[in-house]
Amino acid sequence: MHVRELVEVHLGLCAPPARVESAAQRSPGPTVDPVNDHRWTPPDPESFLRRWDLLPDGPAITTPSSHVIPVRYRGAPAMLKVPRILEERDGGRLMVWWAGRGAAPVLVHDDDAIVLERALGPHSLTCWALSDGPDGDDRATQVLCAVAGELHATGRAVGLARTGGAAGTSGAAGTGGAAGAASDAPPEGLVTLERWFADLLAGTAGHEGFLGQAAGTARALLDHQREVVTLHGDIHHGNVLDFGDETAARWRAIDPKFLVGDRAFDYANIVCNPSHDVARTPGRLARQVSVICAAAGLDRARLLRWIVAWTGLSATWYLGDTWLPHAEREAAAAAVLGVGQDALALLEGRGV
Image: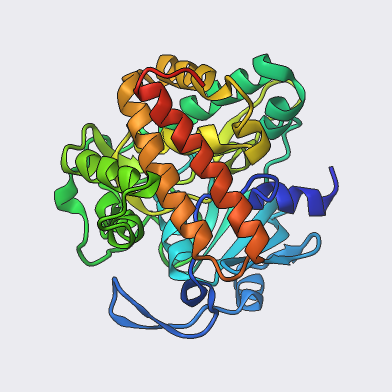
């Protein structure tokens, strides 16, 4: 695999984004850090190349949310990720805390950047789902569920009381040393699902269509959350990569959000991936729901309700994304809304 392909794999470019940031969030200009209450300017990637003695090892890719650069760290292939928005920076803090437990190993980090081990394994969940028929699709979903479960097991039952406070240091090497074992307590300031769903809840008051139903479903789920854990927030085929080799796969997650809440939420996005065409295949949703429930030990009706809520939120973000061409965002919103409507039909006992 060429270096640029490796970068694209790390970025999850083969799968549609679960979160569509607003234009303000995508801006690389100074902003106010809501955790530390000071002005934050995205750092210069070149400074980390010098500080950590990193050797560029391929073309850099810049997205609205981050810079990702293939590098060599102490001779080993790695990826430097430098955030352009606060959401990405906080995701890096979570990667440090997981310390390789279900997530890609962090080799070196500070408050504003991380260096990850590079995924060089030969396997791809996206390829399985797209090329190996229903069996490959189901096998990929089982891997996604296993990785999500490993992430959730770290700091399980963190409790909503730990969220919203001032952030402390994350990881054992906050000043730029190699990342060590994670502390038992997750990073403070994790974003609650109530805050994450704010755009759906605020924008659909009194709405009688599917978005109104999705908002009502979300509100009921948020008011009665179960098994509260630290969440990944963006589990899909492009965010779980093979860090193994030809002899054995080693699946690890990248690019988390910075969330806490009901663990069932983390599985809803799987059914919308690896592509909208796959997600809308007749019969696929019902089959995937069965696979996820068996692999993750979830109640079928509860998972379907989280899918209804999530697709409503995802569609709201797509429709509000001014960076996408109008036709593209309308098509993306229609696709995820279709998945949500199918989930609602399954809940009501109607076949899809």
